[in-house]
Amino acid sequence: MLRKAVSWTMAPAGERERGVILAGKGKEKKERQKSLMDKIVKDPFLTDEELSEHFGVSIQTIRLDRLELGIPELRERIKSVAEGTYAKVRSISGKEIVGELLDIDLGKKGMSMLETDDSMAFEKTNIVRGQFIYAQAESLAIAVIDADVALIGVANIKYKQPVRSGQKLVAHAEIIKRRGNKFFVWVRIKLKMQEVFRGKFILVSLDE
Amino acid sequence: MLRKAVSWTMAPAGERERGVILAGKGKEKKERQKSLMDKIVKDPFLTDEELSEHFGVSIQTIRLDRLELGIPELRERIKSVAEGTYAKVRSISGKEIVGELLDIDLGKKGMSMLETDDSMAFEKTNIVRGQFIYAQAESLAIAVIDADVALIGVANIKYKQPVRSGQKLVAHAEIIKRRGNKFFVWVRIKLKMQEVFRGKFILVSLDE
DNA sequence: CTAACATTTAGTACCTGGTATTAATATTAA
DNA sequence: TTAATATTAATACCAGGTACTAAATGTTAG
Picture 1: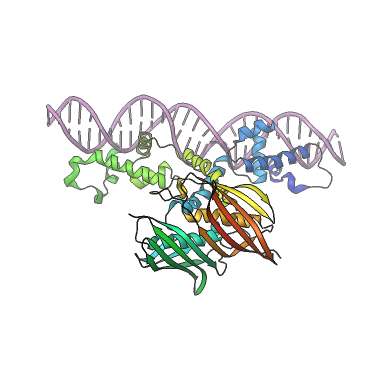
Picture 2 (picture 1 turned 60 degrees about the horizontal axis):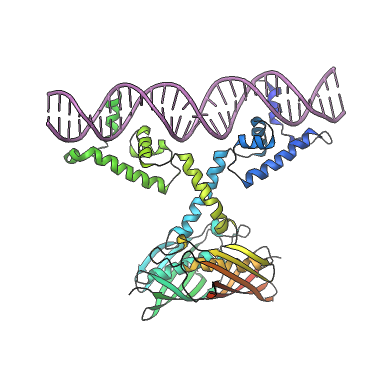
């Protein structure tokens, strides 16, 4: 309908760049937007009102800026912070066993499966960090000990191949020796037929 | 007026045993509230509307329940999840390093501190799980390598003493040898003056 | 059976922190 | 002056609530 009015909001300054036209006011805008982006990244919990006070402009201007910069509203920002972190935290600190327990023969052996994902890997390479593979092995080793609580004494570990996120790891643990309250457990982790990790754990049962 | 119609949808056959109906109403409420609390704790992102559909009651009932149970509204729940994890998560998965980096001399050595807490320990014994100590060591070893990405090849580890939650661990890492893109790093973790962990990491830089 | 009570539902006004749209007003370069 | 750009304003609307009032519907004791 009123093409004129609409065309204003449809032509964001950052994309126009008609040579030398931009000066004075345009710079203020660019600087504000840069600073705005920065501020919101640092503190996603700021409302448009707080931002408008900080920059000394109207709320509408802040909203236009967010629109042009593609920054979502407060609630969406908070939500994504919450969602992004909710799952991760549970997986690393919530449970006792890392991965899914597939089979267990208490006091003898056990098997678990870990489906790796991006949150476990280095961003650039998609290679899963060692701590997650280690955690799978350690927690399975503890699980096979038929005792209420067990604790690692010594571990001797070898990472044989890098693992990429998305790959499924299957761990086998076997108690190979027992002396009193000390258990010697071998854990091998395979990716398909390839062994990617092996380690020897010496665990100490703390039961009386 | 609409009450009759609603009461139909309130009796989903399987759940209301006619024989026990005498003791009924009060227990239904208590059970629903217990279940509600549980559900919200597990998934804080549920709206009252979704909850009302799940329990087959009106939105108002859900709100009354929340009021009685002291459960805040959706936005407050999300906000507290976001706020609570915003700081923590950066250290465990957002950043590459576990613990706080105290000092670093890139390519030579580094030092980090990890304040252990209950979430890192076995509930019964308060003994910190090995994976967290390991993660501190591994991530520090990676941090001292002056390269964009590094990956663990082999690790030889010894846990010398159990650590209880609440104790502060100080890790020292030192590059002891370098051969091409392979780095040999020693990491020692101490609790006060006592050494609780030592390990040798062989890291491979993936930079071209 | 009925009155008293608990439980549940309905309806309304209001709140925050927005979106989307239209329009008016500065500012400024050419 | 004129046209483009930037800012502000005003309005209608939305989700997901709070707070409150009123009423309908069980439930149960007497």
